[in-house]
Image 1: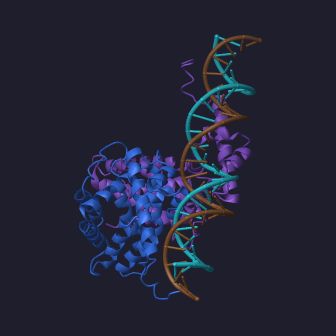
Image 2 (image 1 turned 90 degrees about the vertical axis):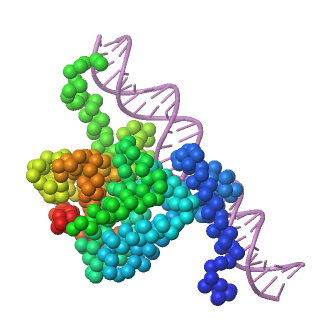
Length: 205
Length: 205
DNA sequence: TTCTTTTTGATAGTAACTACCTTTTTAGAG
DNA sequence: CTCTAAAAAGGTAGTTACTATCAAAAAGAA
């Protein structure tokens, strides 16, 4: 209980240090993954680079995967989606949200995010975990889509539209994984355009 | 090289034994998973139940996950999809294929398959791996969809339709994973109908 | 049988995670 | 400033999935 006022502002000195440690771990992890590959990088190496013990690593991230999947962009995207004017249909709202979020990011942030995406889409383990995470959040997303369509949260058609949006985005993000052009998503503009075109195919109805 | 004729017929005595061992492992694995849970079942236990050594287990299945994901229904489904008359559009063809495959299965086979699906959809690890597997095959699927639409294999719109089909099926198969009704897919008819309705939402265009 | 190849088993090692306990650090009270 | 309680970090030991490697056994061909 102690001070009942501090609960409101989470800006304690301790919290800041924790946030910094978390960011440090993630930064070094991403660097090592890029340098040596995901599988070749051990938790011990990450801990050593971040100057913490392996025990501490697990206090900040439950799994190795979460070092990459712990994400700040997705929540932003969802918030932007929610913030769109009610007149917009769900697909249009999501298209606008995507463009808005990426336009609000600095070049460095975009670079980091694109690197993260490249890693996630490349490593099968991460790809699976990412999509599974998305499925976990799917109910919420489907509910919001339903609300925006003026239906009850559990509406079947809304759920299906949400599913189609999800599938279309996945299909756009995993471009010919076989062997073809893994490139093409080098800059944010190309990414936004690709995702936008994907969602647009759902609006021609 | 040895005998150049046997290559055609794969019905050696050795092959049959291997197939039997594979089936035995999978059967015991599924049983133990159902009895004790997926995470609580070790490879050692599976090996012991199947009366083989752990080493041998890994010769038949590369990972624990594959014991569940090694699947005979999906390829069948894909084949049935390909076999549909050319006049049918991709969505209609897939709807027909699903119904056909499940109608061609015995009650016991359906039960086994439903149990497998329940397990896969319940365990996050498996869910992720399954979907990642699907993404791996996605290119082929999208190509077939494109052909059926009379376009070139890499056609964007076809790819998006394939993605939408994928997403809609996922959304239908993972019913309110949060906490709501995990039931409802107790019999094959309910499953078929659910998947059919999902795909049907893509045809109203 | 005998030779060859395939299949199996056993052993040792790596690395992700878990559980648990001890030490250090930090924030606030007196 | 000091003392105390809590939070954070470090350390140890163990489990389990998975890999690599080699030796033993079984099956087929000659």
